[in-house]
Length: 280
Image (cartoon, rainbow, N blue to C red):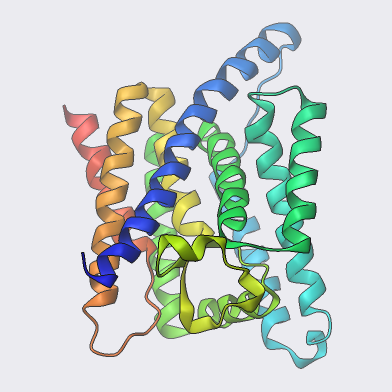
């Protein structure tokens, strides 16, 4: 097996694990919400317009912080805080579907302490997987599949513009790598490198798959799982993995290796999967 395909196997492993865990959390959290709604008459609601607005606002804030020299000294603290907050929130959702909340909180605090002392790649990816699977499960429950399909299309266009045109996504990713608070999966060049310390790794010794490249497809997968069923949710995971393969092939076949927007091909194959499920 060539070096490139070894890298893809590692990337596929963590990508598929995150999505499959997200499907599991979706089903678990749906049961919890149904019990809560039956007891309290509670029903959650959130508009797609509000979601897009909050997303763009957060992106603008992170862009300004990563670009402006005024925030240069505070970047490390900001990105570290954003990492801790999002990981804690998402992982709490995931772990709370299996453990009592107090135990879930204890587990995630211990993991974050270990990560702060020694951010090995395997631990980093575990935290990202736990975080995104929880956030994706909750967000997928809030919207119908058709609405998420539209959002996924919009975010794919945004990703393309942010990487190739404004290039602010590349800038933010670079700043996150510098602070080691990477909101995404770190893909080393071999399985043995998973035990390496991220702080001792050079930028050219690993790849990064952004958190949005996992979270946005998971929104759709989660919603379809609730709408159609577990089998259809797993089928969607397969289509998303095919999208990941397409993205990887686009990257490795470049004459000059440059960052590419991974979301568009993943979203395209995910939308094709949704279309197949809806029709069949």
